[in-house]
Image (tube, rainbow, N blue to C red; front, side, top):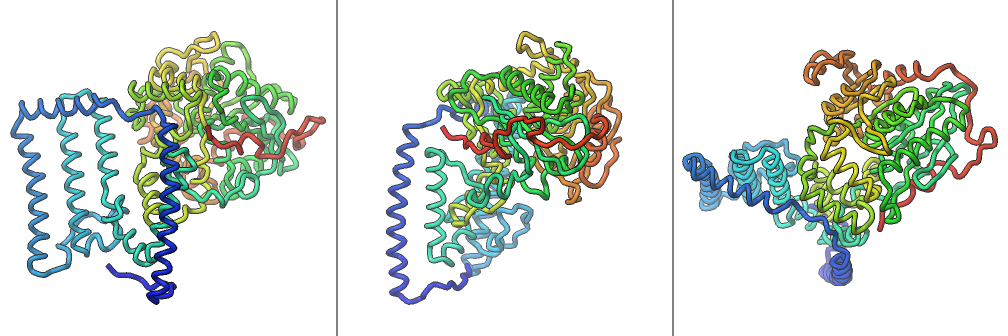
Length: 602
């Protein structure tokens, strides 16, 4: 390995002095580590991994396959051993000849984990990488060859096998990570000290649970450099604060717009900074915009259910917006789980004969959960039973569990990669607003979490016959208001085809469906000025999702202007701009308010 020169004093005395200082740091850090791990043992979470029967069934299936088709098993094993032995012999022959260069390496360079040139040129790292890839391929093939197993269980087995593969990557271990070793040499070990500090800080911040910090939290402040669109809190109850944004135009459209963001995270994903703020952009188009900022529940919210989110959330917000503006109707937006709940609310209002919602917009909202997609491994009884035990114990589903679930769907990008940079390389997490928001999660009330997971996700009750709530049998067919749904092409949380299928089941005769490029967040937070992601449209929603896409028209650029053109037609004439506090309405606080600042700590 090559090393770089440092600015450190290179004298032996200076080196000894730095070594002594580092030893003192290690001693102090070790004491902190012991304390935080002791604390963790007394606050252990009850949520465990998958039921061990999954692996027992896999073993039984594998053995059964071997008995019935021993040639297939032999072929697999011989292929694995042939590759391993050949690989070992190539390396041994090169070393015996005194050749310290790596054998010719034709493996793909697409994997960012192995971007360091030493993975190809250095015999040690080259050998480790190739053997890891051989092992990974063998494990994947073994899972693929399991035939006598329920497809759902096999899918789960594949997921957890991939987690093992990702975990065991040589980049995740100091002795086999050339980047980390080079950095340690360059910094005379200071990178490892800093990495240990980062590790212990993350453990201390989460009661001993390891949650890798993805962003520099000191770089952001709500209301100063994120969530900065001017506005006022004009209403507050136990469930939410209502923000009315200050108009930036002389005239505004008559019908107000109210946004219901997901309560799994904070609303300011839609107002990160001026350049990509949907909030600011909507206000600048001439709309009276209201934002619901949900409370971050603590254990006192144990018995708060979906009905409370609808009654004291959606219906209360709509009531207040109508009172503030003097209008009889509002246009509503629901994002993710808030879009799911907006569909419940629309069915309820239809059955009550209430026409308060003029039109509905859904951002990446699932209403048909018949295909659980990448979340299927987490929606089986062993996991949901564990979550239920956790909520019974704590009164809430802690945000750390939701964050960990989402992260392990993209473990290399959101877990192992950041951990390597922080704990091995000693790097400070980046000042990235999106990642800061991603780490600023919210708890879910115990009752609501189980209603959602058992009834909607597992049981798919809303799409498969109706969801019973608040004395009503809520059904997608009741949704008859004009609607526009935006889904994202690479969304792994709410796959676009599943969003589309739910929209097809809604009763409205006026439906617009837009599929934007990119994922759950970047596809929605896609300002026109960036001209980054395009979108697809097709008016024929009678088609299945594959045919819909085949016949869809692709348009370069953001979907925001297309949606705004749709919304404008549902928003009436223009009137004088409405300011927070008009008609002596009481102002409670400046935006972004108090609820959004509460951290999810128990």
